Image (cartoon, rainbow, N blue to C red; front, side):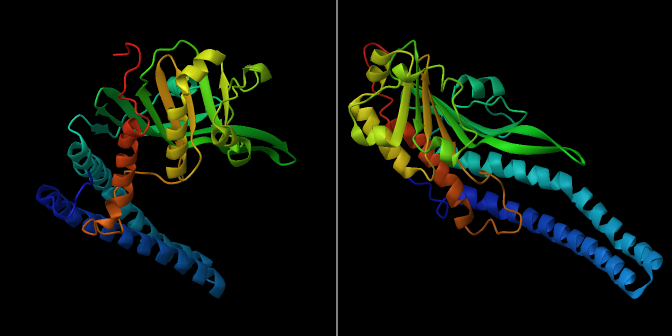
Length: 318
């Protein structure tokens, strides 16, 4: 079922009220940026014309005023952004399924991020937000935005240079799996190293060649490389039907996904390039196309349960 924004009267009223606040914030921010730019131009012009000191003094006044405007509007901006997540995205979630909820301030902890065994580097800088939780049928699931980075420090002739590199940026999805198992099975795309150089499972080499799982699905083996701590159990998890569903899910995703199956839980990492569920400031809320990407993403995550047939319980899994 699609979320019909145009015909949702309650949501249209919320958007109309928030649009007034959005315009006020956008107008104040625009004014602040104009004053700051004017001050910088005055300073540059003064240096060019040979009057540096008067130019600096003249330029500081609009720069300071512009900075004050941006500082004063910041609290309103944060409140507006949080209201968007709670009232707009939250309404979309409830329309899809009453069990769904979003918490803008929570996410997936670093310990669980590493527990998935999908990432080699422990993050030096880690941000997570917008935790969505709920049930689809019998299956509990949750997902959140994650941006994990590690740093490298290089010695140069001028001292040290610190650089930050992405380990993962996107959405990390977790769900109860419909089979009981004790081992670990990890599925990664064959182009894993080329496309995402920092993405390596911490068990990449510890599994060894003997633990690479050769599966019956030729396309699956061409697309993914599968590692498992138990050959029999990995094949028990990755049935022919599930492999087809994973391939289909991967085809629907913009970038290749990675999966792990650990202690009867499934994790899926979806690499993404943009930050989702953020309120637009310089685009109108009344234009419903602004919400399409966010709502499509929510629907896509919710549909994973059905796409992978997770509600079918096998051999007593409740």
